[in-house]
Image 1 (cartoon, rainbow, N blue to C red):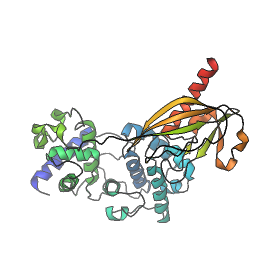
Image 2: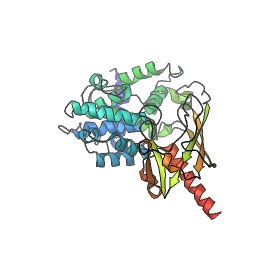
Image 3: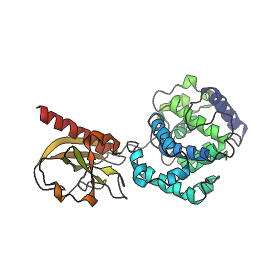
Image 4: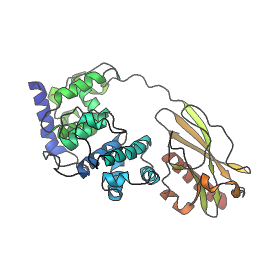
Length: 358
């Protein structure tokens, strides 16, 4: 590490020592990872998986509920898939939950011990470059270049890297690697994340408060122009239907296919909508159906307009028990529905109440 990189790292760590965020998965600055604490790598890994494309504020209650229910990686590995998926509901990007289960079971097969190097961590299911580097640095103190969206933004501004993304990612990673110290690499990674989240924000960065302001090449050029991003592509709009069937105060829920969007989750029945096209297919029951409104939801690669259809017939016998389950309407929030279907359920309940009082 050259003198300039050492100066930047030292300034950032000094700032972190006094300005860090207190989070339930962190140890205090300057303290090494707890020795002989098998739960520490588990907590670091769990938090990093949850934090992917999700805010800290949204993650904290999920993290606390998960660690109360499954306090160790062995406990999580032994959990029912459906229970984990239901507990994840609302956090989004559900492939993460499926990978979480697979990874926990892979670690359990190793006796409950996480690998301690970035290279070996990459061999676990669902651990990409970022997560493996973060766990290696934070949980085990290995020097690793940890680059998430916050770090990417900070370093692109710090070095005024004007090559558009994603082509600039190699240069950004190289800069992070140069800056990362051998001592306290976990604190350095978390300091970068905190700086990006609280000071070097996407819009209106607070440069006057930044501990790296005198080292930042992008400040004079206008920090908000970094990182340079390509024009946003217009997301396609897909359309589909979802079906609300009620009997004796209970609503019919199904379990989605294990693979694919929202895989393995409880859900309302729906047609064949997907990221690739509009839904097609008949409702699960023949009879009287009425429109209950439209639910709109945004996925990473497409937007969805989901037509809610309400069943007003009574031919429930055609619903086979192995195809789904009747769930009490007054406990619908406990069903672990993904956000899309939770929206649809709330709309259905409101529509039915309005119909009864109208």
